[in-house]
Length: 278
Image 1 (cartoon, helix red, strand yellow):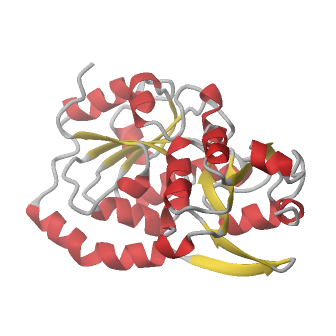
Image 2 (cartoon, rainbow, N blue to C red):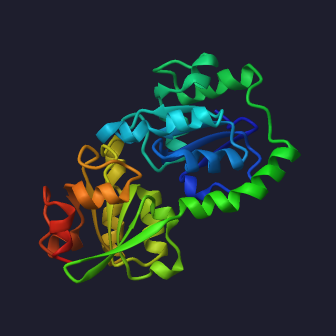
């Protein structure tokens, strides 16, 4: 099925730009987040978004964004993590099925179990959402920089003499993070792994996002090992996705790559225990 006009596919929300003009976003990222992230999506002219439920996980963090998108008047749906690979927008489009919806999605007639393609057809057929207007683009350009700064926060903490960078998303890193040991709230899928390689990290801890279809939530680990980066995921039930501090404080390792295993990091270790081996 051809991708309809007005629909954009992105593997990561980190790739969403303020000059986006497609009102419907089908994205491989998780459906977690906070108000600032929802505002950022709105300011990028998105009016409907489809995101992975990331295994739902601890405190239902994998679908927490639904209410924030609702507050920002964005139609939002979470896609079953066993129906589509997290971090892969094309698979979300081709194979995703809806697991959760917000109020705007329900009003559009989208139901649990709908295919993503069918859900998109429903909102297009009812004439919603409309393309971005010039005024909304101006609004986005005036507000997006502030929202991005508030989103892209990092903290540094020292554990056993090692400086650790903690952030809610791997996409919030920048060139100054080269060589860092990072604990983040992102999933461990391919798109997240690309950011870890881009910033040449020493080590990284992700959320496994329920592991999901084709083990997509941990799929980056092998390629990161090949790139010389120690990498692990923690169980989505042990720590909230999009919450780096919770991963650090409460995360329980679920999968390790070869380099992590060579450092004697093992499944069921806490993140803090694992950090002692780096």
